[in-house]
Length: 440
Image (tube, rainbow, N blue to C red):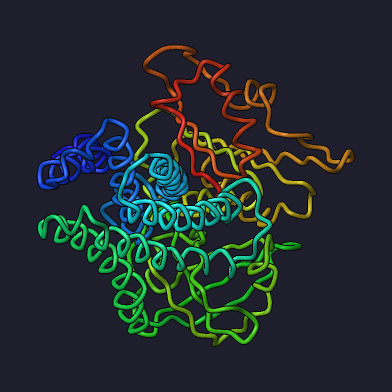
């Protein structure tokens, strides 16, 4: 089955699955007098919120088939949005339920109970919006991780409310359906948090090199204790947990910077950016690490255009670095242009390596763009429409078939600036602009 059809089927299942559950609920509950239009709307909102919340455990369990079809960066973004939408539906249902006038006082009590639990979820949703992967990052990773894990408690709380409600007691089949969804979520959570972690720990890695590339950039190299490393493609990334007295043990995502040609070693290049990465230079050779991967679906080497354009911001260079090294190692001499935005000249590490790449491939052009140094003799400022027009122009603006693929990786502000510039140049966004959102 073609990839696009798989994506359509998965999307339809996600959004439409609450409908048959609601129809079963409606047909099996004998309390027809209570089925007023407003009550039915509230019940449908509750069922939809419950099912979509359950699905969050599938979305965040790093399933390879989900990553292959959508890309984990898009899944993370979708997960955040759908969590908030599910919470909003649940809160709306609780408010409607509180204002429905019924004679059964127990229903009012259930409504208050629902309101309390959905307010809790609303608070969690607000924290989600301020957590990793969104614009503001004021919450520490540990706190955000705790909130994410606490979602299983929230789902359990809602599950108990559902199966203990009067409607569920009217049909054992309803209890079975709601229980099946809950057990599915619990199964994915246990597989992700326990079973897969145990499997990963059976294949440990060891840090064999810690190198300060320039300023706040560090490259860590790992070797497998069991032999060769797993296969990965240029531009992909992995999740790494380093067992060090100077770091917490959580898994964090990092792009590969090494060439996949090297079968005995994996390297990642990391910039000090936050609570965890600020201490990345304190790890030691010999520290044990656990690596899960690979992830990511953007492979620029699949491009069949005449030229590849890489647009990087800061540490967004790492997936492109892996690709350029792989091209060097495989004698791939296709036309390639790199625009790399940094703040200071000292952040342009590996100058000699880039120079050798250009010697091997005369079709490779590298343009560092420095924003905070007026004495820099090269490109200054930010990667904007003017620089893109001069250094990576669109040759067939507005046409369905174009000659260049544009790959972007960097912080949200850079993407927010570059994307409209490319669109204004006439680049076909749907086919020729590829974005790796900077969630890590």
